[in-house]
Amino acid sequence: MKTTTHIAVGILYISILMLYCSDESGADPYVTRFLQVPQGYLGGGGLAVNDSGFVVGSLGKAGPRGEDAFVWGLDGVPKKLWTLGAAIDISNSGYITGYSEYAGPIYKLHAMGARLDGGSYDPYPPYIDFNQTSQAVAVNDSGIAVGNSSDNGSAGRPYISGLYGTNAWLPIGAVCDISDNGVICSVEGRQLTTIAPDGTILRPDSNGQKVVTAHINSFGTIAGVWSTSYGYSSYIWSPQAGFSSNCLPAGFDGRIEGISDTGVMIGSLHPITTGEASYSGFAAWNSKGTILLTTQNTPLYGISNNGTITGSVNGVPVVWEPAVVVPEPAGVYSLGIGLPLFTLLSRRKKA
Image (cartoon, rainbow, N blue to C red; front, side, top):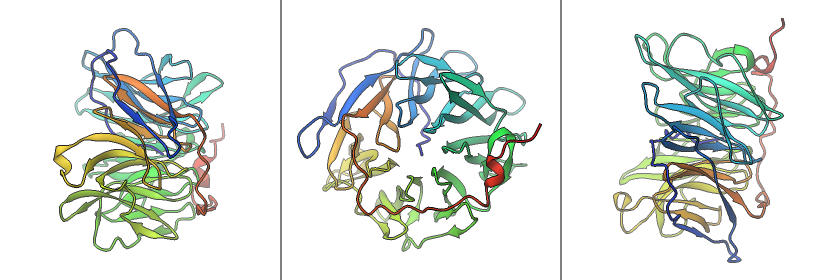
């Protein structure tokens, strides 16, 4: 689970961090940790974080290839990820995915993979290698990655890819995310679509609202952005409750960019009375609508299953770690689905 926002190059210095942290007890729910930027890089940010606090992202640099991918451990020290231009997601089991960039007759992106294991980082062959533009958007604990690829001029053809280069096209729209249970969510013609590991495709009725983005947690709850008559707003969907727009703090509208297993959401908020264009603050809030963290002009890019958040402050990658582990919300529905359809994708090729 992750977000796929592309990082703009930032300025390498730390200024005063404008944060507001609160929970219902008044205690600070987050511990802020700044990560290192190596010499020669202009800045960037963390794009995804796992429950152990390992962060992946990209840092900008001068030259024809404008960015490199890095992973940061708990010590905050960056380690470069080979040919990856940007690392988009990291699972709790240590799988990393993203894309690499290179200049040729046609500028191409190729989805790539790596594995964090005992402090070392072992590269895998490209998750997808069809000699066309492709970008991975998410990877789960089983090492199954999903993304979108152009094929012979087509746009946004979705794929699923297992370890060691086993790939397959998906019969759904543009892929957005994959849960640790193997449930994939996508947006197909502004329609939310899910595909379970057994191949079951579900297109829930959004009552005429046009879905734009989708992020899924381990329990099958999906949150994201949809278009409305006045612009864009957010929704939340679960198998048992269906769609709801009651997912933002009271008095605010905004765009959800991620959801944790604990029901904490991240995104941008603006007061309903002022309109979207007048305010662009970033925040984290829980399922009760309580705002836990706000950052003025400081993007929040990714949130892990346990609610650890990553982003960027003036080009410096940052992690906000929960000071207290939040219990999972009561009554959360677990899909509990097996993996018969995509089992072949998790099997290692025989020598």
